Image 1 (cartoon, rainbow, N blue to C red):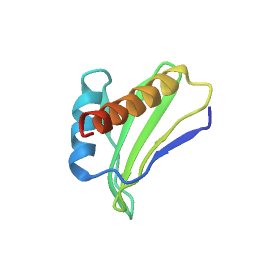
Image 2 (image 1 turned 30 degrees about the vertical axis):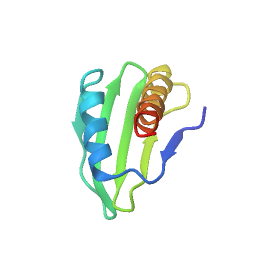
Image 3 (image 1 turned 90 degrees about the vertical axis):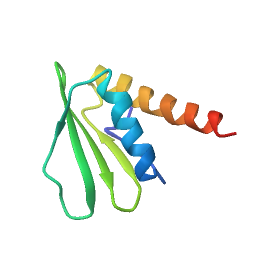
Amino acid sequence: MKSYHVCPNVRESEFQNLKGFLKEKYRLNNKPIQPGTKESLEVDTTNGKITITYYKNGKLMIQSSPSNMEYEVLVNDIVEYFSNLVENHS
């Protein structure tokens, strides 16, 4: 698995709903916002930190060490969340 995963074209409402979904499973901490960023979150895990960044252009990027097993689980949770969202809107 790569050290980052990008979800393009995420609407603000979808991101806010995703945050609620993730808060049920993970402890999210706010990070300082950089230029071009709408929101930045961090998840502390036993294998290191996972960073979730939502950009003003609608991209969502998840980053961590590829060896962090919890990172792989979190990315899979996000992919499944968006997959279910698409299925429910079809």
